Image (cartoon, rainbow over all chains, first blue to last red; front, side):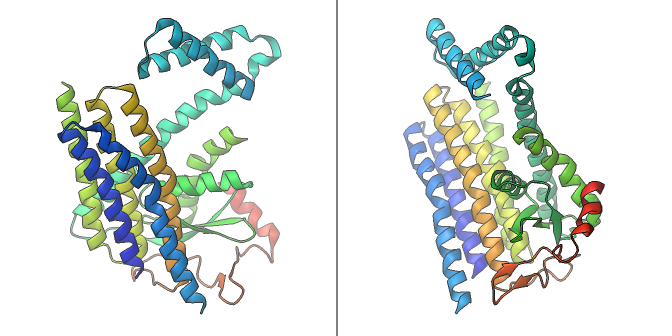
Length: 59
Length: 159
Length: 132
């Protein structure tokens, strides 16, 4: 279960890398806004999932 | 300290507005120029003001952190690429010198950011940080490595 | 000239992200996976974004990219710390070749308290501090 959360984190981080590579390749710097929002939001998913696991452990 | 920093920023903006060249390198050059001018202008006891001692140390710390980051990255990359595992992982108890919330959180984040080491948790009485690391030769040398590297430099800046 | 630098930086960044993905598969336990994965967030993505900043030589884009790197550096350790902490407390085992586990038995599951081991003998913490 925990390994999947790490994989999700890695997928989102790789997504940021994809977007930046795409913006270099097709010369569209406007796409970097998407990368910024992803970088800000990405860790919220991890926080939510870990909170869920902690609550599950308590029971 | 705060005063000096704000006047430094103000002088930078004046420099950029006068030269009329809004590029990143010009901002940087203006900042360095106004830093040295402020340092020359302030005299006497305020010559040893905290700001002028700390500012070079912050820059040195950033470069030290980047060096550690690249070094640890290459170590971990070699570990991943070679077929045999040569690592000796484990969880080490690291006694903290840092006391306030800010110092502890900075130290824990810096330890987590370098690959290979991961800060697990701080004990409830805030005396100990548990660190998971990939390469532990023995406990004393690992603790001394972090204490003389990250923690000493960080406390020099924050205190 | 800039094309060559951009190419080299983007190549190195991609290599580091790729090695993080390989390490994700190869590493034997959860904690080592977390350690390997933080590398993708810091150096790999950082190099890719810096390549983008050099490619489009503008102040607005450089500032945006510096902001992205700052956000990544702020958020990556938070999530790594949370995952590591939760997985230890939910009972994920360490790798069998691990050298030491100082945290073993320090966590009280009923009161959810993490002890430091220094409570009973406060003088004992002094020599370890001065030796560092």
